[in-house]
Length: 335
Image 1: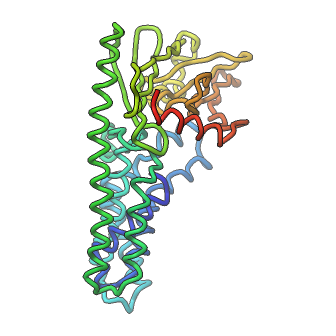
Image 2 (image 1 turned 60 degrees about the horizontal axis):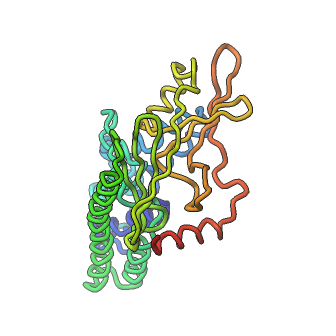
Image 3 (image 1 turned 45 degrees about the vertical axis):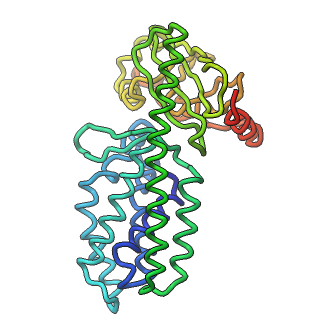
């Protein structure tokens, strides 16, 4: 999830664990704990693109990381807060839950998380977008109201609990919506006589009213959208796989690792002699009918010594945000 959401979750968890004893400092350190796992993005400054992608939501988002570093951070805080009523064990408990709930929430997104690292098992339930106001805003309001009250106030605890209940309930609702929309996609594929081997569904940006599906067929991937307000059948658009365009580079180590990151959901394009690999898991940049650009696209450029350099291309270059949001809102309202 986005940084603000993880800060809110971490602060709320900190309050639940230690708020009665240390007040708003529990929220402060909980918010810090909720931020720490995402510092893995700094790795992109030191390693190549593919390695940075592999590391993202890896070790720092694992149970092992929470268990290893919660005592370390807890010790550091106990030294900083020497006059606090909380001891090292208290701060360790707060940091563990702040660190641990971060990857738990991320597991519900499309990217997912390697919670059981180093075991090669990614959890990605794909039932909430990385930024969802309906999850974050009510949660944030409850947290702000709670932090204004005395640390021993029962109302403070109730407000914080309300934020946790509302946000968790919303996650459950999104799982139900995912199941409902998944069946809608399946029924439409059957009615249209489409033969496929796999289907993956997820919500579109900033909402859970409009969902999209990637469908794996023999030579192409189909992408379709379904809104809860739709009255017409789902229209699927085909995107050729073009995997053969990789040629000899399909056996290149970096390329194979990038394909592994996409979990097999990728297409290949060739433009001006260069190859481009699209990661289909995050869909197209916009809901505009003529849109062909994918949110995650990687340039594969041959270099010396029969190697390749892989770089992520800009996502929204030349795009008009108003048109992007306008097209999204228009599609949410139904076909």
